[in-house]
Image 1 (tube, rainbow, N blue to C red):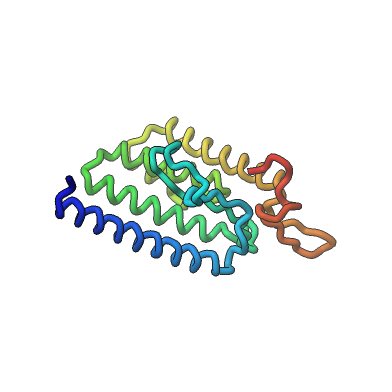
Image 2: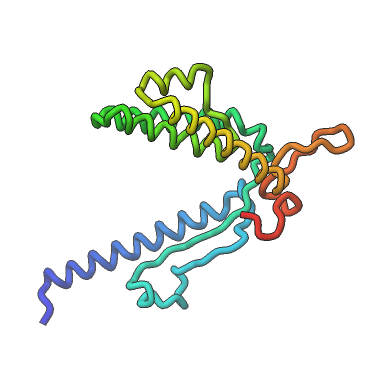
Length: 191
């Protein structure tokens, strides 16, 4: 026979589940009412009654995919990417330095952030970057290799952006913006 404590626990759990369901539905309705992104192009809703949650050991989720168009070219975003890369680098290196990471580890993480920024077409190097790395004790060949890697990433990024129509193009003497999210800018199989 079930004790009153167990029955109370079950009732409390039922109230919590019902409150959670109402909260989720209200949040979802509010989210779907927003128009900034337009309608989703695909939704996978594992909260539907038809979904068999036993297949995922009770885990449920909703995944919606949207098309986002910034209305800017990659070239127009360069300053934002540069600022974001500088901020990420500052935060990562600050945390690592606060943890007592050695200088060579800090230099390695800094170089990794630079490489990612270069993949997005932003040259993170500022005047005197070679001297800064030399001051950290990196040998000349390592500094040259780092510079060559950044140059390659920048070239590769430019080539990829150009092949996908993600650069600012000049058409008939006028600048025409293309975006990675417009169908004519993204070819078949593009990411």
